[in-house]
Image 1 (cartoon, helix red, strand yellow):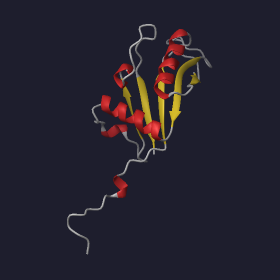
Image 2 (image 1 turned 135 degrees about the vertical axis):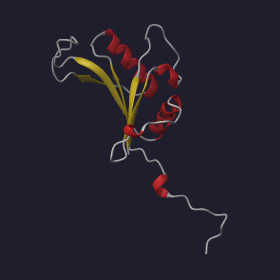
Image 3 (image 1 turned 180 degrees about the vertical axis):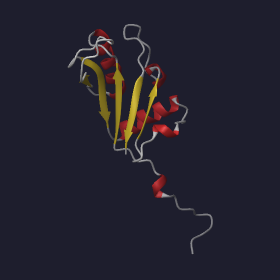
Image 4 (image 1 turned 90 degrees about the vertical axis):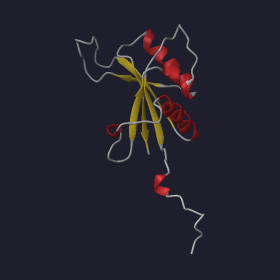
Length: 134
């Protein structure tokens, strides 16, 4: 019989991350979008990918196939490090509806400077979304 002082860890409680997807949606192409891309590049060290609008929304001034967002996928130890910073901003508290049935979850932060990136007036402040796929 095992000793009372030695307690086994439950392997199902371990958090495994397959990938971390980060997204900044600006809603317009141009200078604001390229500055948002710089923010993601500073955070991840990778070149981000631009996302296009699926259809035209005249009330928002968005045309079909116009680049309106930028996203980046990070894996491995770098993903865990960035996720730790993001959860620290949210004070390690997420709501129940942030989680999917399969165990994936997502959350957003209001200002990227809370992650420890130095504020640059030429870039501005952007919010970003985190999506964790396990």
